[in-house]
Amino acid sequence: GENVEQHPSTLSVQEGDSAVIKCTYSDSASNYFPWYKQELGKRPQLIIDIRSNVGEKKDQRIAVTLNKTAKHFSLHITETQPEDSAVYFCAASGGSARQLTFGSGTQLTVLP
Amino acid sequence: DAGVIQSPRHEVTEMGQEVTLRCKPISGHNSLFWYRQTMMRGLELLIYFNNNVPIDDSGMPEDRFSAKMPNASFSTLKIQPSEPRDSAVYFCASSLQSGSYGYTFGSGTRLTVV
Image (cartoon, rainbow over all chains, first blue to last red):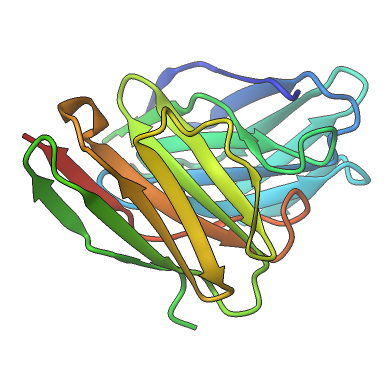
């Protein structure tokens, strides 16, 4: 089945700096890669996703890049703000596993 | 759209009691998922349904856990008997099509077994 590895597990940045979270996946047939943000005590919420026919996607301060050859994808947050502090999960699906396989999460802390 | 609706939001029960968690998926979504989240184990998929049929229940910890989806708008996760190690946040999520679209999560049920 699919295996998704995510790093780092924790990340602290100064407000205004950029943050990058990286994930690798094992199933070369996977074709859908969403990212979720989970604030403390809240539900995970989809913030951006990318499909395998696209190399990069942006939404305001958030971007995701995908390297199919290397089987890795990354989340980039620019001009970080304190409200970006949360746990971020990557996920992958579309190969042998019909359901999403989640990474272990990254606790992002934006220091004011 | 009200989103995925879970009840109750919080549940405190004594060890050995039966617990039933409920979920109403988004109308039109044909896939439903039950997850358990703890600090130690992160997000664990317990079971998922496609068109009301259980597809993969390999994540269900043991026979004490059971899940049903009698129709497209309702699912339950039952724990009987409950144990303290079952304490966790249980999320229900639904999707338009498993594997091709993102999931919408409910607000979760925080279960505490004392």
